[in-house]
Length: 161
Length: 161
DNA sequence: GCAAGTATGCTGAAATTTCAACCGATCAGT
DNA sequence: ACTGATCGGTTGAAATTTCAGCATACTTGC
Image (cartoon, rainbow over all chains, first blue to last red; front, side):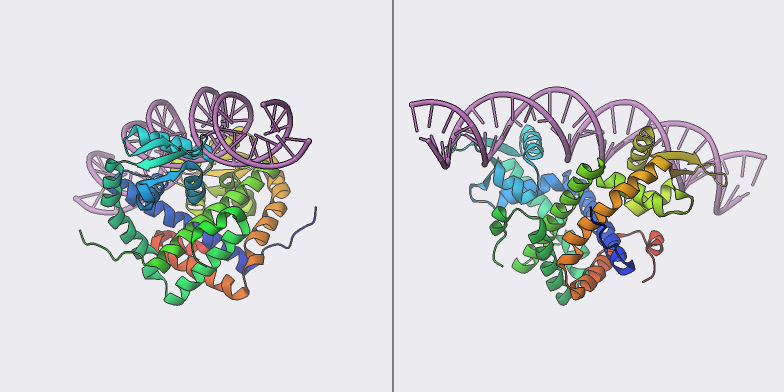
């Protein structure tokens, strides 16, 4: 095994700052979400994506890649949300294996109630703190990192370049 | 409650890309760590910090803020690492409440074994993919976000500005 | 049409993480 | 010294996440 170049001082600081910053940021956002709507970010992510989808439904498989969950985790999460009446798990006519998660009216109501506060948090903690230049950078950097780790087959779903 | 400005198209894409990118990146790094040393990133983070500290020991409290864990999580994690003989949980003479986690020789050995591969991953997936300009940006952005969410009292530990 | 391989999803057990409550030690004010 | 607040840490139970294995349905090549 080849000994890789170590991280220098500057790189180490960058890496640490990125790790700590993103973790604390997500923790904070999650806490607000919990307070406001009793949802973890994972659950909010699921519900929010469903709320924007046609028919308010998404194939489990696609939902999983969008949220970066593995299939098992999504199954458990959707089962829990279904137990609470926020989501339904419906079959797909054209493919017997596949199923879709579909937002119920109750789930939609919850998203509508939680979204404004959540978006406000994201704006306050992220976009209001960055210059337009930094926002462009963040987009480029994130896309680059994403390109390095994402499954190429699923990358086109992310919208226009 | 005030209705906050919604995220526009560009901001939404940036936010999604950041979330997905950072999550997939961490997942990937974690998977390699698991394969290579049977450690989650959380455990590696703890062990790695201890390995660089004087006496290979850090107060639980400080270790928790460094890793962005809450006290409870760190207690459980250290207990588990102690059960595996990688760490010791020792009292502090000057303060009867405090305790320190201290890396054992076995723990040190594990870090030494895992670190090169891990660092290589970080280099390959992060720094090799970013221009020097982008690396500077990432540092600035991370610091800005951090400043927005971190407890001010604990911010100075992060090294020189 | 069939067999092997792959895709999609689920399940149950184990591990981790969160949550609330607790305990003892220190500190601040009196 | 005494009291109440805060700090540092632990604990046990509940919730989430991971892991391995399973089952069913589609796909491909023969």
